[in-house]
Length: 186
Image 1 (cartoon, rainbow, N blue to C red):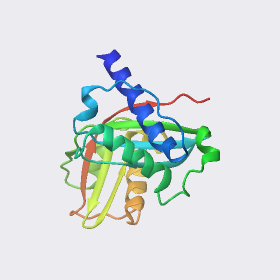
Image 2 (image 1 turned 60 degrees about the vertical axis):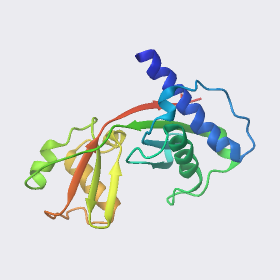
Image 3 (image 1 turned 180 degrees about the vertical axis):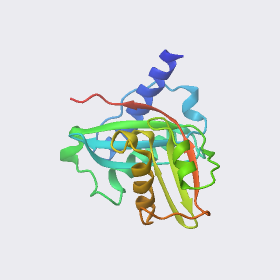
Image 4 (image 1 turned 45 degrees about the vertical axis):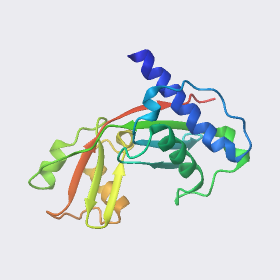
């Protein structure tokens, strides 16, 4: 299975980079056309430049073939992330691509914020927060910058547009895990 996962990761990284590169006229490279690529899949594509976040867009549920999900999310991360200007051709070679494949999300059941915090698993769980029209997620990789569950949840609330100290019994949390692959730094 590890060899198959490595092959899948390599194919996903090629698909993501080539989807962005096509915009700049780059030729597409061959990849292993694995059956998993044609099954529904939820992915996030994260772009970094010299170690700094440069774009991150993804899908929280598997509603289209993984091959399409990765290509669409790669282009969205490069050209439509509202936090950043579109990637330019001159910086494309400095961009590193990471693809995360998400498991289906499962709800957390908790009595209060302290109970919710106690259930979070740092460096394992990605978390989706929802409250009415507010929604945000952090991939498990965000634990690297925010290892404390209280700070992690506070920043997730802010990302959703809520105050860091906000709490409501109507707030819902779901968790998921990822398998991720990242291009090596050059």
